[in-house]
Every structure is written in structure tokens, then in C-alpha cells.
Image (cartoon, rainbow, N blue to C red; front, top):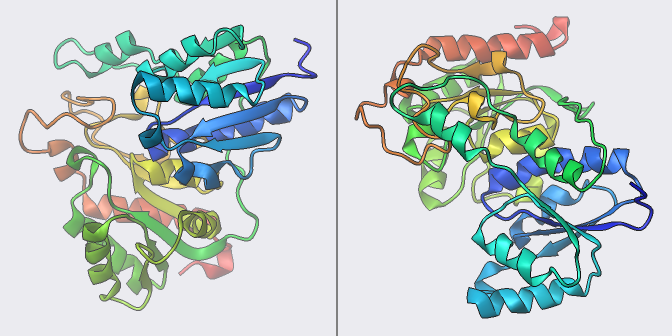
Length: 340
């Protein structure tokens, strides 16, 4: 494709983790197609994610100001002012489908995300599961640009900050759903154990309830520091870029860590990396999960209650195994003279 004058309107709203997951793809796309300009439409609070994407203009859209068909018509009119030549829908929901229709007169070539709903259903159903890896979400995002005629080859590699603090670990113990959370009492014990081993532990979360919990953990040891309610998203991203390791659920912080080039030990309960949502550049050997529990995954996003009622997928994950995995990962990163 002759892309010398192409301006691509890119849609991605949704949750924080889903939006963060698009960023490595967009960066590599621009590296391989440097004459293209991206017009990224997303929620205003996610702007810090895209500051490292070259040739990009961020368009923050508060959806509360564009409700209903009338609101979407207003938004479409505003987006036409940017004179995009192509449209990449990385969300593909009713709202973006309507926007594509409203923009048809000005943007002729459009492509949308294929979510693989049929494959997801087969992976998560209770009986006769087809337990096989689905196409990774970053490749599905890249496929949208391929449909528009571009070439993009993803590296699936992390790009770490060279100035990482080798004795610091980030811990993000929360997720949107209980089915995706490791028991908090065990995670608290792990943080305290790491602090006693002379690691500096940074805690990540959001909201008043999470802030209160993490503050109580901070009070347990001087090496534990809660960042909740004390730092901006941009500041948290900078800290994540400097820690040697993140410990996270299947949650936004895993994807933010990938964006910042940081290795992640990720914990999986009701969900599964096979659904395609493992952090960009992360390795399956750095996951902790019950591989032989035949009820999992029971959902793609963890939003379905445990039908067993016991959350065995998380309850049976051994605390000592997780601690060993974290320490071994840190030792594999740290210079030999700094090994405890």
C-alpha cells in the first residue's frame, strides 16, 4: 500500500487493560509504517498510555457527553474534522459499529476486530471444552491493520528500561472480579515475606476500599509502599518501568507492565492465557495457574460467578510456590553480586 498520506482513525474504548494492550501493537505498527498518522480515539484518562506512540494524535472522548444516537452523530461530525482516510476499529461493539456507519461518507476503507467469539465459547463452556490456545489479542489487533492493506510483523518482545531497580517488585493484588483474584491474606503474607528478604515492594490498586487494604499492608513493614491514591497513572507507569518484576492478576497492571517493558509473574484463576490475553511479550512459564482443573477457564474475562462456589482455581494455588516463583524470577534478573 502507498501509505504516504494515510491517516488512520483508531477506536479503542473498553477497560484499562484492553486499551493498554493495544499500545505495543500501535508502536510496532508505526515503526514499520512510519509515514502513517494515527488518530487514536479512547477515554481521556487513558492518554498517558499513548504518549510513547510516534506519529499519533490522541483524541480523548468522554462517552457521557455522547449518549444515544444523537450523541454519536455529534461525535462522528467532530471526528470528520480530522480528515482520516482509513478507520481501524479495535473494539467492534455497537457504539463503534454505529460510528463506522456514520463515517461511511468520509472514510471508505474500514476494518474491524475479529473477537473470535465462537472459539471463545468453545474454550470456556462447561462441557466438551476445546482447550487450545486462541489467536493472541495483539495479533487480532494487528489483523485489523492487515485488513487495511498494511504489513505488520509483531515481535512479541518486551523492551525493558535499562535503569531498572533490581531490588524492587511491584504487586497488583486486585482485579475487577473475585474469580481473578488470589486470596488477599496470602498475597499480604507474600508481600511481607518479600519485604523481610530486603525487597522493596510497591503496591498498586484503585478506589478507597483497595487503598485502605493496601495502606494496612504498608504499615506491616518499612519496605512496603502503597501507591494507591498517592500517585497519578502516569507516575505509576514510570514506577512500573523501573521495577525489576511485577506480580499481577489477569488484570490491567499486567498489560501496563508489558507496555513499560517489565516482566510479570501473572496469576490466573477463572480465566486462562489460552484466551489470548497474556500480557504482550510475557511468557507462559511466568504464569501461575491450576493447569489440570477441568472447569477452567469458565469465562474469558472472569465475569461469571464460580459455579463450583469454592473458587478452587485460586484457593489451591500454593503460596510457597508463588513466593519461590517470584524470588527465582528476581534472581534470574539481578546481577550475581546482589543475590541474597
